[in-house]
Length: 624
Image 1 (tube, rainbow, N blue to C red):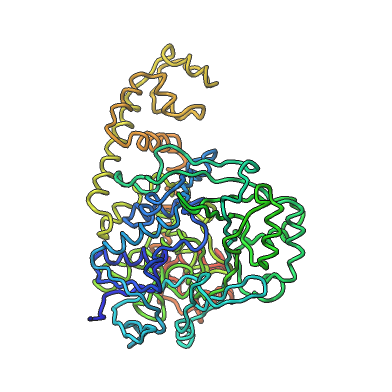
Image 2 (cartoon, rainbow, N blue to C red):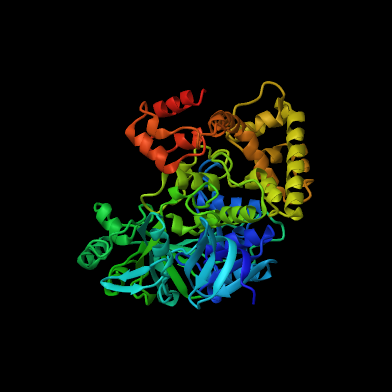
């Protein structure tokens, strides 16, 4: 067997799978190395994909021609569009998934992808020559050669599990940790640190009293993650359930704090601020008398439930006692307790925007090894790393996404520019152009880019062109078709909107906030007929048209701002100034510029500690 490849991907989690399928679909001979071929795409924590801002990332992955949206839809047992009460820039898709089916869908994709091979083993060491990575050496002692390597080891690098005072080495419960790579890269000058994350206990649904909880059903409409017509949600649909902790729960948890790894000094690494453990919640929000818990099914036919909101590393007996005080969980039986895990990560400011390391050529990092948390953030990085590893092997222009093009662009720019001081999680608030980065238009933004890479195939381009064509037809109709006061005023009064005094185009009428395009169509037969004449994907096209028309002013204004700031992105900086000689900027600015060595003025402007005055000085030095 010839162990020579274009690209080797270490780890078959969400980053690794996306990286491997991306590189292989672009034409690279790719090897995916995993500890367990039966756990490809394992959902280590909650059995769900998407959510606020994360759902936008999944739609972007799909629009580019990636796989996560397809896998999520085909394993979904519930779909919800979050934040529908807010504007469309905040709408965020989320699926509840069958954990086992999610793995099976990934296995189908990975094993059916041309150019992609799998090897079950553990990587112990990387190999290098002349400042570039050349391959890996596995636990079996096999040396494998590659032109590029992508490290996506997740929580497995020196993973240490905590349940109370009990500690176990592992990357997940009952799975071994990985050693050797961190130590090797540290010896080569890479900065590393430790992070902490956690997961809640799992309980037997047969022992839950659902009558004491509130049901949370999913949506039953056309929305899904993938833009592909032949991808459908086919699994049986299940509800989630809501319950709450109480003061008695909190008192029991407090009694266990002395044995909590988070508070007795056992854990010293950085934990997630936005997804805290239940013990952190009761300490941080000590005046709050209850916390919401979501009971999430792990599968279509499984009795296993995930308790979202009850992540904990407390001793298992404390976890059980506390849970038994929660309504509906008085008799709950555990399948396994919650736990915390510490693991190694690398300072992401050591990366280029392509996710290639600055120190070693053709070595890429993606996922939690970069200090992020979440399946979606990992998968987005995996796609970018896979694409650029292929480009490094075969030639081409580096593939990156700007902050006004994708949430994936925001994510990576934040990582390589600012670094992390806690596990990084994406939020809509991190994106200054979120009106441009809506979940509904990811295909309009990114599918042509995916096609240029060879990822988005002809069917995607055909569907995008069809959508654009039908949207344009609908826009033209609404701009050309007017209604007179006597035709529409009764409807306007019925929705508390002011009457017309003269004829108005449907396009302008829809700008009013009191109604949407479907309500307007019920009052205007010609519009209703036009909508009914759309051959397919009618609901998606009508919703997209309404969003674009109603928010066109905001969209255009944000695009103008983005275009102005884009000028800074086009001013190259790297290698043009010796920062040690510049005394007119602050010491902190010099240190940050020397450390990160930004590519452009725009990149420099986003580094924490770089002031507008520092940027002005740099522009003067560049003759601008």
